Length: 360
Image (cartoon, rainbow, N blue to C red; front, top):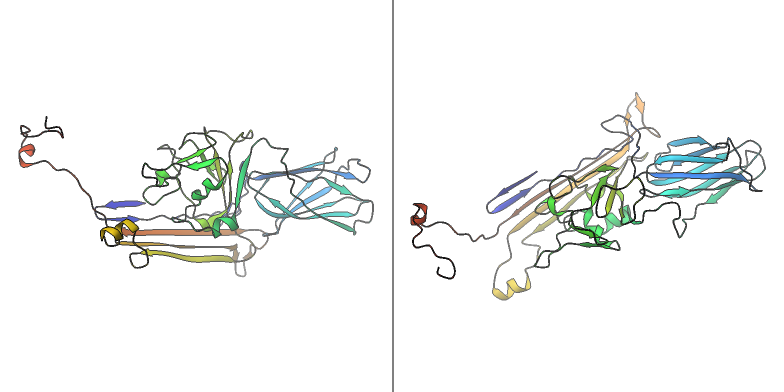
């Protein structure tokens, strides 16, 4: 919500997000295009495929387990998996169990895990550490993933994560004639947040997705909502070409993943302050003897997430989770305005003494 008044400005922005595993206290599953896909083949030490192998994918943060079985050709697929850190277990009669740890899934990633089982007792276990391949060969799209640690550690003037888009190869931000960066700046209006050019595309032609849902409006193709920094798990900037499930754009695609609650209660509070006391004056203003511009800017908020539990009735650990984030922006500033108003004669309809700059 934004109210504009002469002499000062009030800005209010709030982003509330709930995890896809618990929205308004109800659990539901995710199935969006930006989720990861895990697939692979299970073979024995001689290369022969093994059918009916029990394969289990475990989320490290929530301990939610997703089971599946290999088909007659030894192939297994987890078609829609939220980004995060996972472990994979594979078990079959007559073979030692296989355990793969440190499996990291990113936004829109297709992960291939080929598992080899060795003969032995099922109580035995072989642990393998997943290694990220240097080249992606199973998807056509190309892009850059910006992870949560980077999002939260980089100082952003307006705490708008879209400002990080320009750090991707091939993406530049549109600037004003005076040289000011417009892209990602939501200080004045959110209709400036999509002013990016990605791989030569026109600005405002990019698609923005939040958990797979379109986040661009009809007016200037601007961002309809901007998640606060603490609510973003990670995001990916797809340049080109795009995979089959992506499209609807003449530029790039920016996909955000919102955080989910986990088995551990976690959260934060923040307050970012700017005012005339703390801010320095500009060089030219000092030279002209102009005092510092009056400014009072408060950007505050917090987030909290964890297992949904009702004492003595229900424990959501390993099952149901919640996540909530809020951010408010209050800005008061004063600036001068020069305008032209009609003379008394002009107000009466007399324009006989009205001339242009050339005197005509």
